[in-house]
Image (cartoon, rainbow, N blue to C red; front, side, top):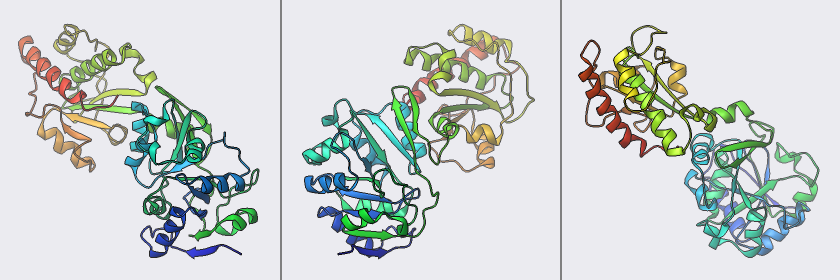
Length: 374
């Protein structure tokens, strides 16, 4: 008997028909569904029989895991027992999207979702000592995962060795014969598989090339912190230099090694000119605090440096408005460095004024860095 077929618009993640598919999955059925990359075939990881059926369809033994599919960003860490700062950056910046993240899972029973899994479901997710998680940027796929309210695992809807389908009409006959329901949302957006990124501590490797290339993943994995003042010769260089020192101390590395860990700290000015060194007083204020900004050269604030920054800290409310005039950013990305108020410009003042500014910056940084996951 052929499976039931549902036609759903790709942007309709609340379709009543999608609820029927979610019910089928919840009851242990096998559901073929669309994503933005390829069509998948899903099972309920709380149901042993459902997992065994999926393994049979994919001709896969219990030692080769399936990928968890979720419909919310905050669901990722319910399956990943220990997520590194790098992992959290990729969760925040790459999901939802055409990427599968593989997290280490040496203690899978520490994952909040572990208790909801059947024995076969747990083995099908964590069998390799890791867990692969996908949050598709496709309303139907994400809606199915949310509506089912069960742990949903999936693989591409092709027989072993065959090409993954990018349209419901391409789904392998053997998969269709074993499925209970097929959701047809038309051709997929990218017509190729997701990029698989395997995380390992502070680094990652591309385990499978897909929609996103390695350069894009590197950009998403990077933590960018930007400090903005007026001329980029006093306050923002001090802030950047002290920030590098404080982050390096936290991570147990040299400031010069931060870039190797995917952390880039920059400063820029809304006025002034490019290529100017930090003022001698600023260099000395940093030196007294163990930071070296002697090689600093000023740069104007531009769209590229703004777009590449996860956090932008400004010295005054005027700088805040200057950045906002360039682009709309949420308050958790753009903010005053000192939440108590403006940090005054010491330019032209005595060394004691630079000292006061450096002290204010240092205190404000200590508070702000507590909220940054580096």
